[in-house]
Amino acid sequence: MAKKPNKLKARLPRGFVDRSADDIRAADEMIGKIRAVYEQYGFDPVETPAFEYTDCLGKFLPDTDRPNAGVFSVQDDDEQWMSLRYDLTAPLARHVSENINEIQLPYRTYRAGWVFRNEKPGPGRFRQFMQFDADTVGAPGVQADAEMCMMMADTMEALGIPRGQYVIRVNNRKVLDGVLEAIGLGGEENAERRLTVLRAIDKLDKFGPEGVRLLLGDGRKDDSGDFTKGAGLDDDTANILVETIAFEEEVEPQIGYDSWDCPNPYYMPPSEWSEDLRESKPRIGEINRANSPRDTHPFWNYLGTLAAFYELNSTTISALAELELIVDLIIESGYSDRIKIDPSVVRGLEYYTGPVYEAELLFDVTNEKGDVVQFGSVGGGGRYDGLVKRFTGRDVPATGFSIGVSRLMTALKNLGKLQTSEVVAPVLVTVMDGDTQALGRYQKMVQELRRAGIRAEMYQGNWKKFGNQLKYADRRNCPIAIIQGSDEFEAGEIQVKDLIEGKRLSEEITDNVTWRESRPAQMTVKRDALVETVRALLDSQADDRAQAAKA
RNA sequence: GCAGACGUAGCUCAGUUGGUUAGAGCGUCGGAUUGUGGCUCCGAAGGUCGGUGGUUCGAAUCCACUCGUCUGUACCA
Image (cartoon, protein in one colour):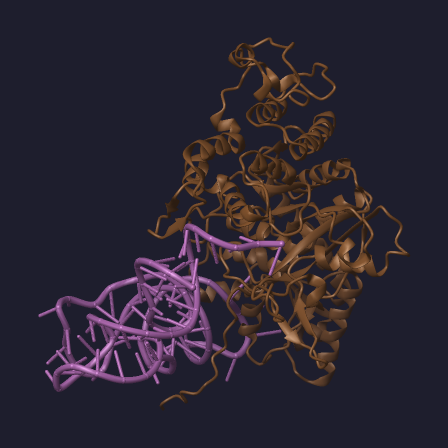
């Protein structure tokens, strides 16, 4: 009786998931909606394989010839390292580089695909997940970046996330570069510290200004008591950085001042201003390069604040100029309620060179237990001007972003916001007799229904237990069962059983004998009337569902 | 990687200061009902108590290690 102990245990690798019928249908629906937006914007699909040579992905560890641990890698027959792609951007750069002579630039392209990361899984984080990516390759201007932001916003809405429940946050990496330079963290010798600072800045939405201040200073202790060492900046520097990136929370909006005649910080840095001028807290937010007035908008307030805080170096000035243009385009196109400048957006540290942007959900995401859970961005991207150049030597500027389909779906699913597609289960043709002739008759019915465009199947289990057939139909949520025993056959008839109505009637019947003998919601029709009867019944069931949905 | 919490039947969980053969509900399967789903009743299957080692006369319970899950954190191209 003792069970063999060495029975193989079926188990799913950590961080991977099986997808159910509902998941697949919902994901397909999401993908369809995203694709429609991208197509509308004039993007064309192209696909690359799941594997790439590791060097093309740029994923070797600095001082070894083994790939980075974060990617799944295998060695080919010829000992070359190959890796599963960890995003869709690097493979696209490889594809474009290989076909650079055939591709008409600017190249507007999209693709959906599985990507793999060998990391610790978390809520909405898997080791295999789907991204839906769009890129414009060969477009140097930030108008391409602005377009990406707008397309992201449109995509979120196409997915049914209402305006106000998400935000696209934009920043420019050069702004941070310039700011770091201004606080004396420029140069090679500070590279390590710059990374720590950038990582701290990236945590603003997670820990708030106070948490970032700690991370910029000595360090921070998390809820479990684990300590994270900080960047070790002095208080003043940390404070000014926090004010810069958290300006909305930290900086008093400087409205009410009319100091339009203060110097333009683009040309005259605030450090050279007179004491009086500084005291007057000029309404610097309205100043731009052209020195002409603009409508008031918080975005300008930020740019002005930035300009006022720091000695403007050339990096910062060009960064501000780029942000300014993006902001202009966003406001002009009417997207300023969805897209926001956020100086704390950092994104990955590797290949982004200019504007970066990410999409974030503004509602709480909960897990199965109902606990609110830390949920990262659901999509993001930015400008990567150097990625194609690695292969071609040519300057091919590019910008693009990915929607994290899997993660977004997890969020929507946990919230019950995932519209479960209404796929009606098949009509079940039951088997009363198992002889060849009878089976042929049933099969014919099924084919008639299918040809009429109705999902249908013949029962393929043990037909001798008829009760089980209806039980099967019930559990599958079949809408209708077709029954033809020898009695019906001889009369040229079939039984058409409405399983939905029958289920409703069952609530009123408590006695099993009555339940069985009354054969609820079942009608006898001529065999020839099969298709029309089923179709009429399905239609009326669909009407009932529509009514119920409205109520 | 680091920190914390938790691992008992397919699922949700009981299990007393360490004490017979580890329980319940739900689910599954069979029967009452061999041509009718649901309800009801009866019955059955299902566990090396995550694993290994230790303490003990005796361990689901205590200890060590290990694996796994969850949460936070680090990293995240």
